[in-house]
Image 1 (cartoon, helix red, strand yellow):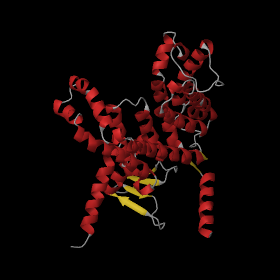
Image 2 (tube, one colour):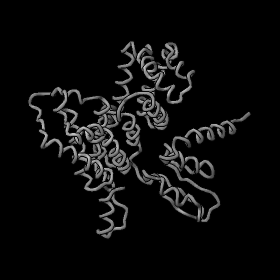
Image 3 (spheres, rainbow, N blue to C red):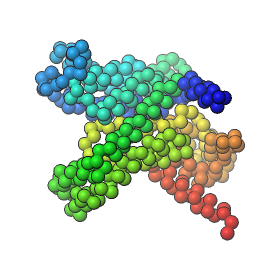
Image 4 (spheres, rainbow, N blue to C red):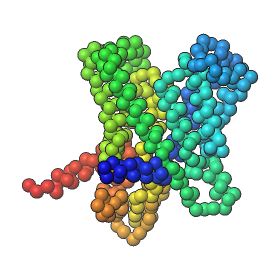
Length: 375
């Protein structure tokens, strides 16, 4: 009984928790262009005088309000302006809220507008509309510093329950996607991927792909195995997200997974949105590592420029090599790294260098562990 009570207390504390959400400011910046890409065809048709009601559409419900041409077109162009303002961080709360509103409104205008990838984008937009993301990397923040006279780093604490919620929803997306493919025998058996490869065979060859590669992709035996690998990869990513020890591995796998999907399949903006959504797994704590550099070290300039998530407190001292004071161990003991270990650990926590540095760090630590073992 006490165990249940402790668990409920733990989750209650989680709901009330606050944390640093500057990483979501980066997500906000990335979502602006993704929204514009999502609405690209709608913009193009509207420029030619064509809106949703001029083509076949199937309303979700009779009571759903439908904007006529005189209202829909201004709403659409305002959404484009709002998406740009959202990325720039100008009037951030208003811009993010209106962008989320219009994308959602447009999706539910017609059943033909709905797709799971669009719903995924809407989930992300609602999240950044709920959480204040304009305190960093925004025109709003620049205006406050420029005209407010404050040079102190802004307080970026915010309630974290929307973050926990969107994490849960994204895990559900991966799991449900994988499960639906397991149930669908055409998908699990490789038929779906084989037909896609056959349909794109000539286009691939004309685009410069080797004939042997296109033959392999069109082969039923290869796709029988490959489809199972793709489905299991989705499960691995989803379950990997759930634990802190496996989260970096899941993110590392998800990056090439979504890039390959974008290259090989038509999923509209899903791959870009899914790649941007990996940001939500950044631990909501700022300056939880201290990087101590020799005076004049080039990393003193590079790290602040690349540390978009605010992971490192950079200090300088009279030392001969780079030192990283990492997060405390489980028992609370200080974790101090130096030299190459410190540099590679730091690179594995920066978004631009993570995918390349993480495997190198793993190999280096594995070799060191092997060297410490007695013969």
